[in-house]
Length: 89
Image (cartoon, rainbow, N blue to C red; front, side, top):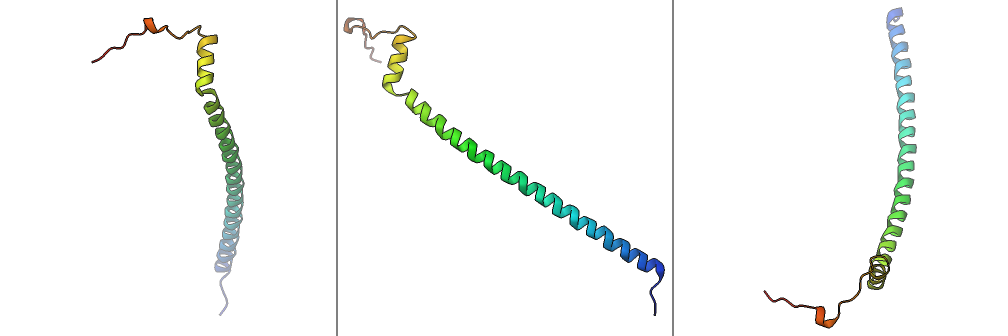
């Protein structure tokens, strides 16, 4: 019993199409893996930057820094005791 030429042609065509599908799927998988790694590096860089910004914020919001900025940039002064009014509800 011999196979028909059309059956053989269809089987060869199916093998070629499926092999091209495998190659395409592998290529897409590798592209997405490279993109995933690049995003991981970007996340790590942003985590470092976030830590630096938090450290800078904690440095700038210390009591001495706030008081110095209020006095030098805004010209604020502490009120004299006779200028303070305490209100009770």
